[in-house]
Length: 229
Length: 103
Image 1 (cartoon, each protein chain N blue to C red):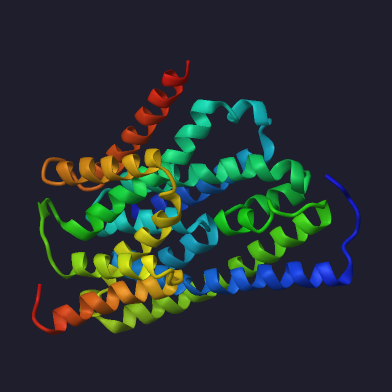
Image 2 (image 1 turned 90 degrees about the vertical axis):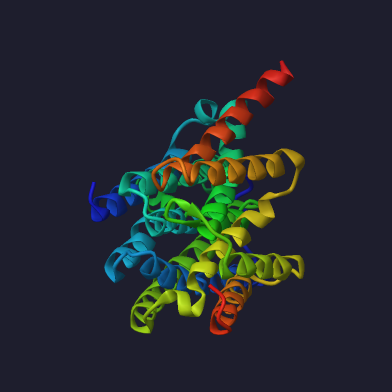
C-alpha cells in the first residue's frame, strides 16, 4: 500500500467524512444505554459493556438475552458469536494499517463495522490510518458518553414499556440486520434463524432459541462449501 | 455465572476476537468455510434476536405493541431513515399503542 503523505485537502476530507459517521453512530449509544437498563443490567454494567466490549450488535445481543430472561452464559455466548465478524474485519485491515506491538493492541479495540467501512476504501496507508483512527476514536468517545446518558436517563424514567423501549430494541436489531440482507443466502439464513428461534421459545430455556440460530448459520456455511466442490 | 462475570468475560472475549483478526496470519482464518460462517452468523443471530425480542414473553409467544413497533421500523428502513430515527419510530409506535390501551 502506498505510503505517500496526505495533502491538506485530502486530510480534511477524510476527517470530515469520518467525524460525520462517528457522530451519527456515537449518538445511538443512547439507545443502547436505555435498552441495557431496560433489559435488567444496572447502569454500571451497561456502561462497562460500552467501554470494554465496544461493538454494538454484541452489546445489544447480551442485553437482549438477559432481558428475555436468559442465563448470563447464553448472553455472553450470543455476544461472542456476533463478535466474530470483527475478526474478519481485522484480517482485512491488518495489511492496510500495518501496525505492530502496542499500537496494534490499541487499534484492535476500535475494529468495528463503521471504522472498517471508513478505512477499506482508502488508497494510501496514511489515509487508511487517519480514517480508521478518526472514525473509531470519535465513535468510542461518543458511544460511551451517550451510553451513560441513556443508562442514567433510562433508570430515571420508570417502566420502560410505557416508552416502547422493548420495541426499540427490536427496531435496533432490525436496523443492524437490514444492510446485511443483500442476497438470497443471507435472507434464507435470517428467515430460518428467526423461525427456529420462534419454534424453540416455548420449548427451551430463554437464550437457547437465539444460540440455536447459530447452528443454522454454521450448517448453511458448510452446505454452501460442499455444494461448490 | 454472575451477570458481572458475563459482562467482563464477553467484553474481553470480543476484544480478543478483534485482536485475533489484526494478528493472526490471514491464511489461518481466511478459509472459505470460516469466511462464510462469519458472514452468516450475524445474519441468523440478529434475525433470531428480533423474533425473540418482539414475540416472546417468557416461554410464551404473544402478539402485542412490539410487533407494531417492528413493522413501523421496517417502514422507516424502507424509507432509508438513519439508525436513530428507526429506533425512535419503533419505540414511539409501541408507546402510542400502549397509551391507547393495547397490550
